[in-house]
Amino acid sequence: MQVETSKPIQNRNGAINSVQKDDLPIHGWYRFVLSFPPHLVRQYITAFDLGSEDLVLDPFCGTGTTIVEAKKNSIPSIGCDAHPLVALVSRVKTNWFLDAAKLRSALKRILRGADRLATKHSLYSRFFTASTCQPKA
Ligand SMILES: C[S@@+](CC[C@H](N)C(=O)[O-])C[C@H]1O[C@@H](n2cnc3c(N)ncnc32)[C@H](O)[C@@H]1O
Image (tube, rainbow, N blue to C red; front, side):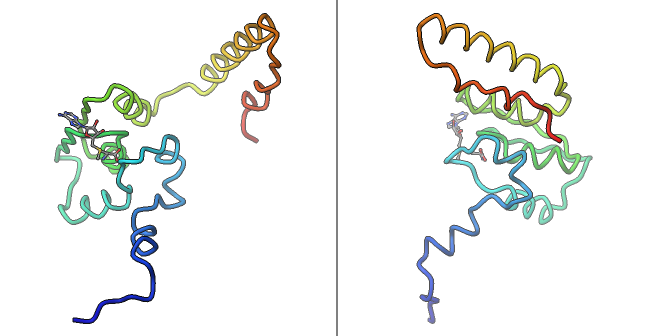
């Protein structure tokens, strides 16, 4: 048997396991070391010919790779996870009805509060720059 040895195994697996550029806006938002790549889920969605009449269950959904990809393809899905933080990340990644203006306003309120606290405790507070609150051009 001939084995390809020109590249180290970790390099070959690296590309397969990496999140592709187009997937970064959703899947790159919170990187979870245990997550698998979205394109793998898409391969299975295609292989199993899944559609809107199916239901995907991921009982170990982690940060939601499977349920996000299902949602992108209009496939109903259910995810759960024992860990509350990754369950929260999944809920955030599958909530596509957020009001950006409300989020920006909440962020400003939080940053102002952090600034006030930092000032009160004589901490340098310029970490909290207003640029994070600006709408994207
Ligand atoms: C490999 S990770 C899943 C990663 C996920 N596919 C993703 O892309 O983010 C496995 C998940 O199973 C969860 N888990 C382990 N035991 C569990 C249990 N008994 N019930 C529910 N979730 C569990 C862990 O908290 C972990 O998030």
